Length: 301
Image (tube, rainbow, N blue to C red; front, side, top):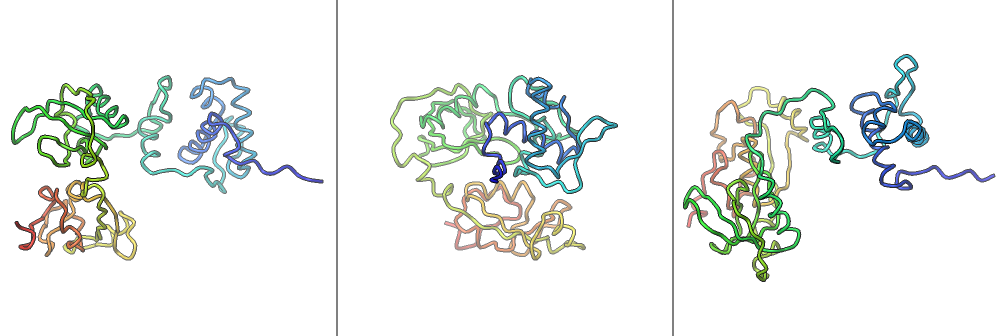
């Protein structure tokens, strides 16, 4: 007698997979889920929610048990998630709500506070930028810089960049004939252009964007208990190795207050990290904002 093969996540429709993910997420991060969670989130009938939970039980019978007193399903001791989770997505769901549709409440799943964002990109400006990126078109913009004030530019954008403090767009600047970052909230009156984009204006020719820099980050030598930082950053053998684009290296160093001086000279309470392989910074352009950075004599033109 042939038994039916065990169903897999990929066997189901996208809508079913989203509901199964919802069940899995709530069990993993909140420890409980019930029919009303699905009814309220997806606008389905209670009977359909019951079927979804039954399907989840079929896929992962050891993940949940029914609490008859609370009338809800709770996480079992043997729980193993059915889905892979990215850390940023999980935190975003916990802080801002699970789901990206317009009709859901998008309420936090737990009490959170993230008071670090001073501004957000203007959505009308952002929309024109993202259209230009998607359609591979140039933009005419008014731009305010600290050095030259208000000027008009033609840019060829290809990526958004979050530096931890504000959002930029990476683009070719036709005025300066170079690739650079533009602060989105300094852009006004964006207008899509139909001008031809030449090869030297495309992402493939942005050397700083395409170069990958490997940074070896260790606890700052001035720390009394470096093992605390090793644990906090999940370092392996006392080191955190990260690979980032040369175009964003300065942002990473600044955002995490990574001392990149050769002799780890910074001693502020915010300096928990030190860049051990400083030589990896050779040729990186946006280091003026990097903590403790001083160019080597052979790097000065």
